[in-house]
Image (cartoon, rainbow, N blue to C red; front, side, top):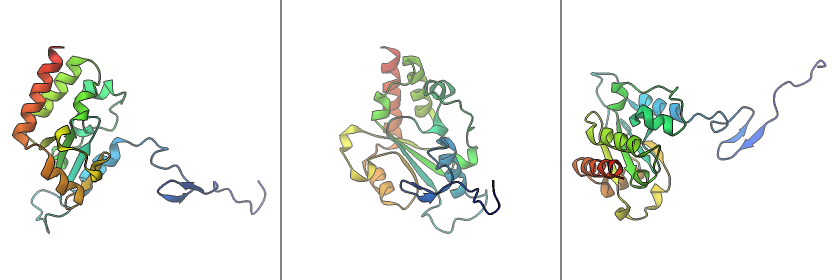
Length: 183
């Protein structure tokens, strides 16, 4: 290296992010912490008053699998994830609502017992609401892919309108779990 030589890596265009000299989030393979960090960021400390309801909670929508914070260890392993991200604390989950598309129930992860156990866990969750978005809801443009967003966004309004309520979702998760056990 000679004096005055620039040792910085060359800038490159990262799709959707602009110019960067470092690895993008996709390049670093950061799947789980992004969601968990968002949940923790939006969550408030116990006893802290909310300024307003908009943005005080995170809504997570998954299309093809169970959201990471709700996965059983066997489901996580069957997905090929090492589980190194850890799970968020109970306080973080209290500031999140989860929506799972019916497609995730059709995408078998692991064997039938892994799926049945995972769906039973979703049906039995009492600490966070987990709602099912059925195929019958049809195609809604703002729900083209999975996301985690603060409340108050258009996607959340759509999810609240088309998803099954929590008791109906629990019943469907149990029905699907029984179906996987009997295959």
